[in-house]
Image (tube, rainbow, N blue to C red):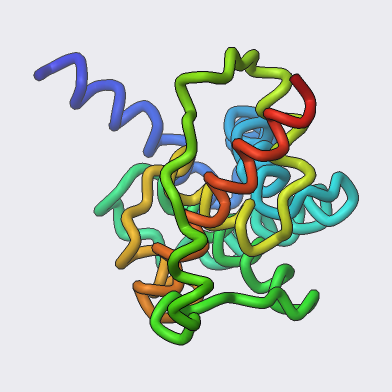
Length: 185
């Protein structure tokens, strides 16, 4: 417990140094979190330039609003929330089409079948490439759910859509991903 508390204090020390105007502390926090946050942005946006822009905007927002950081979560968790929200806002600019499962016809709902996921031998690289081919809405929900650890209620809140919409996007994303992987096999 002492080590965990000491580690938290160590992490928060850099935030405190930033708050007091220590410019080297900004650089240290940036270097510590930039790669992970960039990967989060890239997984959601699937566009290198947009991910880089959103990353920079996220750090700018975080550093500008450090006075609002209340230590209820880790700095990385707080920054990740900013990155995810900014990435979602960027997606909204693209006019991503979110599909609500409650509004699907019976025929369309019957098309949602369990894919034989075990029948496909997958490599991480194949999955990454196939995910890059998914439509923005599918890829976003899949990433937020599988990689970022959000549940459907949280994703619905972030995306400002119904929970049933995130569930349908997730189901369809998995199906589409399996299709893409079968085609590449």
